[in-house]
Image (cartoon, rainbow, N blue to C red; front, side, top):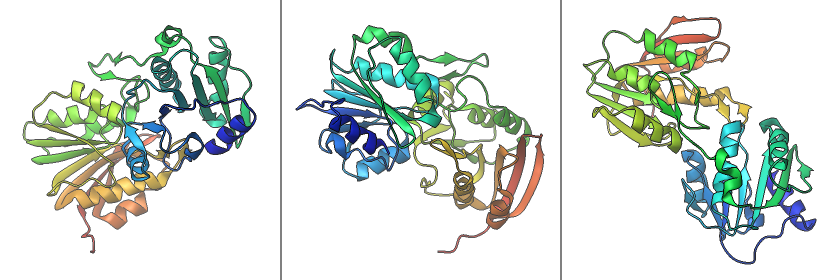
Length: 332
């Protein structure tokens, strides 16, 4: 879809790529076809580990942060408004004035609202509307034009620090707060926070003095950077990794998690189900999973297939708290 809009913009004369120099692509998703920009020229910028690894495996140069200057840039708009603004600001900051800055996104991700904001600051020109999305190109202005859009830390009342675009950036997620309050009085020596985000659940786990090791596993580099600021306890170990592929050398006694259930813009309960299976594979034979999830998600069969003991331990009309213990042995 993205490639279709890029090719149309080139054919229509709306996009003229510089003859030389690297082209930054901010936050594309695995599977995006970036070939119209030139494989050897593209520099993928993403902190999301599965996307990072997918583009690296495809032979692209990949970094978690911009390292310009670049000759041109493409911003792949996310759904979160603050994150979208921050990506545009980062692209403008790493381009010379007049260089092409391309902004592309799906209608379901708020591309029209973003374009309205851009038109109040730059000459956006004609937009390409194809494949349920839109693309527009403008000449990069002086970086100060978007300085107020740059990503800045968000300080929460609870003493945590977050960044635009990370999950629950504006406050503690209600489901995570519910799970933190439901954790047992004692936890095992070795615990994992799977999909740790910026560290809220991890801080609750570390309030238990019997915990000797806590492993925070998080795929989004920006969220893990926040967790490093929020969690200074020496028992914490931080892992930038795809939770579905990560493994420690040995098992853990407990996993806590509030698993995601979106892949990009689309709801995908299979992702949460995969987290459950991954957690079961990380636990000792007597280990326990403590999980919160939206009540409507169909996780009960997955939990019962992965664990011998499954109990609902609380929740409300929106969330279900689950304790699942004694994972089934995974056949080789």
